[in-house]
Length: 165
Image 1 (cartoon, one colour):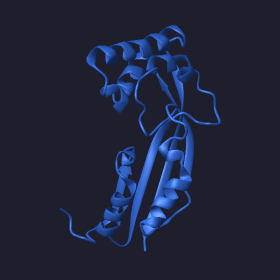
Image 2 (cartoon, helix red, strand yellow; image 1 turned 120 degrees about the vertical axis):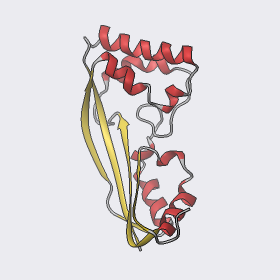
Image 3 (cartoon, helix red, strand yellow; image 1 turned 135 degrees about the horizontal axis):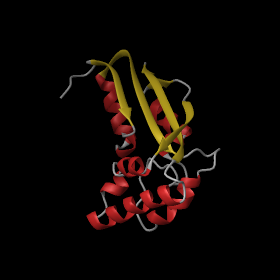
Image 4 (cartoon, helix red, strand yellow; image 1 turned 45 degrees about the vertical axis):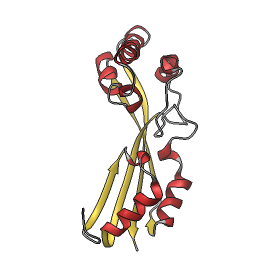
């Protein structure tokens, strides 16, 4: 167990949504030295301002499955996009947040790359082996048949940084 005021920086990459924000941020605040910083970021598959043909072509493969709180086409508002809630959580825990950064970019994958990437998602790893194979094979088939072996996904990275006061 780390002692209070023992670190300068805490970073969470595409994972903080699995924690209970209030007690976790209070603990981070305790661990940071004065003027220490926290960085939280998420890669979200999707961009509300850009159409996502691959998502639309594969959404049927996820029917009836649990969504991950990080979102990206699976929830109304992905965790990393809810800037009001993220900033409130940081302020309520004693941090002074910077303005969030939202960066849009694209990712291009072949069918095997689609399978490798999706195989890491928590909502896929939680499936039974047979269902996981069905979904991953279905994704690769759509990537190959509908997209000619080249899938371009719209991505968004949301970045939140804050300082301890």
